[in-house]
Each structure stands twice: as C-alpha cells, then as structure tokens.
Image (cartoon, rainbow, N blue to C red; front, top):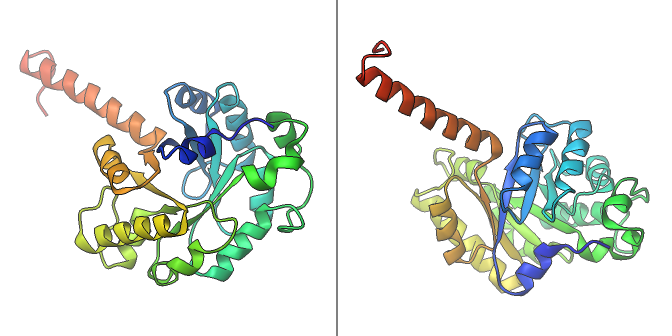
Length: 263
C-alpha cells in the first residue's frame, strides 16, 4: 500500500503543512499539489465541492506524493465510507461533541472487526494498491473536529477513543461557541486559551493536534505551541488575496501616473 507519509512525519515529531481545497476543480487541485504541501484537504462541508468533482481532484493530487484528505459534511456513515472508497487517506469530521460520536466516527471508517465499514474500495485500491484492505485500518486517519463548548467539556473522553489519530480545531465555530467573533488566527483570550488547552490535552493522550490558520506567521506560532497539523488558508483565499494585491498595485501606480481615473 502507498505510504501515508503524514504518519511518518508525526512519528518523528514533525509538523504537517496542509493545504485546503474549496474550489471545485481538478486543475486547481493539481496546481496546489505542486506547491510543497504535505497534504491537501478537499472541503466537502463548507466548500462548493460535490462528490464527482472531488474524485477528479483526487486523481489530480495522485500525480504527486501529496497525501489526500477530505473534510466531510457530517458524521454520516454513508458519506464517510464513500469518500474513503474514493481514495482519501483520512477524513476530518465536523461537530464531534461526545465520546459516543467519536466512537461512531471511528467505527464507520474501520473495516471489521474494528468497525463496520462496508467493503468496496473501488478507486482506493487503484490509488493505494491491491493490498489496501490489509492496511487501511491502521494507515487511514480519523480526525474529529473540536469546535464547540460541548466538545471542550468532553475533550479527554473524545481523545481517549481508540482510533482517533488527531483532532482538528475549527477556530470559527469554536470562537462562536465561546462568545467571540468567528475568525482565523484568533487573539481573543477565551479562544486562545481553549486552543492551548486542546493541544495540551492532545499531548497527554498521544493524539496529534491540528488547526486551521489564515497566515504562515500564525501557523508557525501554533507549531511552536505543539500543533503538528497546520492548514494554511485555502486555494480560494490564496487566489483572492494575490489577485487583490496585484490589481491594487496596478491601480495605485497607474492612477498616480494619471493613466487611470481616481475612484
């Protein structure tokens, strides 16, 4: 089976740099896959990516060594199994609030006897190898999101579930849950304290802590804090930010030179 290099990075104490795909395009995914990320996550919750397009994006990523992941819309066995069959090497699942929900997530992602995932890795066996079934249970990643007050209350119980490899902080929803404005790169004390509490609990349980970031500077701060899975913005954010910078630079210079009207 094709190696899940994320596990190797974490085993050495390193941090994984993850990219985020919200644009429903195989070409966009291919471009992102050539930029040096360790992994790419297809966002099927808040992005505009459907299943059929996600498969083409996975095919594009497969031309590189980048590890493919997906964030599913919900803790739904059918959606989990179907995207795993498509060949992702891990799933990020939103709104996991209790030990029971974490156990249900793990069970849907594991073949018997560890779980009840149905057999049918139609594309996964092409991507990963003919021995996929022999290694899937131990190699694929199960990553619940911690993003509510209830999840914080049940943090130790969630982290103690066998088969939970990592957790992923959703700063937006976590901020809302703590009475703060939803945003990335949080500096509001309640959210900062919660993020630190999560990473410390992960260290205690031997679980990888992950978080979504808007900037490289904040991601580096999170790595220093102990996070070993850091996402940098998203493809759509990169596109918008860079395009905006270039357009602004041209308009500013051309307007100053009198070649564009001042607005």
